[in-house]
Image (cartoon, rainbow, N blue to C red):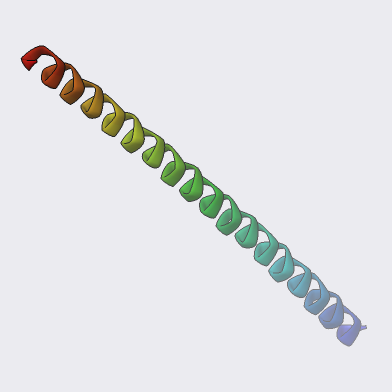
Length: 65
């Protein structure tokens, strides 16, 4: 009976560890996805700023002519 209880505790411990691994893997996955999204937003913002500067420079050069 004692060994049966130990075996049950071992099985429960393994199940808990596996569940924690799954949760950790999901957290890492979502952190990665969020980092990619942030990087994409940063690129879009950078392109928008470059476009804005180019338009301002074009206006300045057109007004000088």
